Length: 192
Image (cartoon, rainbow, N blue to C red; front, top):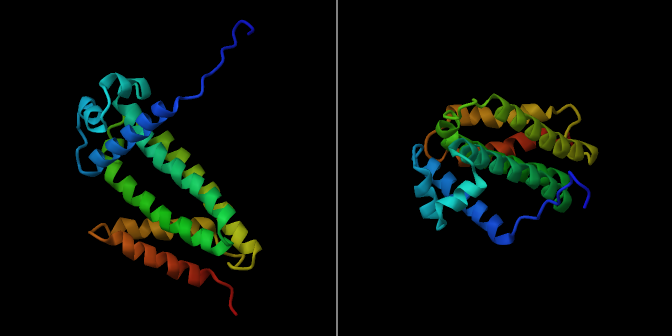
């Protein structure tokens, strides 16, 4: 191997499993309101040592950011997977319902996100880019297939769902927001 070039090892499967389990455990704790949960408690609940946690996340901020980015990555992957496996309008509908779940997750981890030392500006800017790309792709596909009116603005669909989450934060708001997805889709269909 040439000097200055190092081969990057592929993460071991057990390491990836540990990382995912730590993310799930942290998400559950933050969602339960345990914003100040000690990192060693997250490691204990995940069934790993504190060294394993620090091997994946250098500090609390890195863990909080990773939880958020993991949820965002799942949503981005879902757009691609749904576009590949579902008819266009059904892919859009399914993704929008996943977007509601993403909003719900974001709401429960916002207190943890707000504790990030560097702030959330760059993190939220990245999420806007990812979300815009996903919804643009799905709407364009549905428009091309004639299932959605060509004048529908993808961003308007996201704003409608985000708006519902702002006003309806009580228990069960997600089911109402998911019903709204069906209303938005119906209103976006071309006239017959």
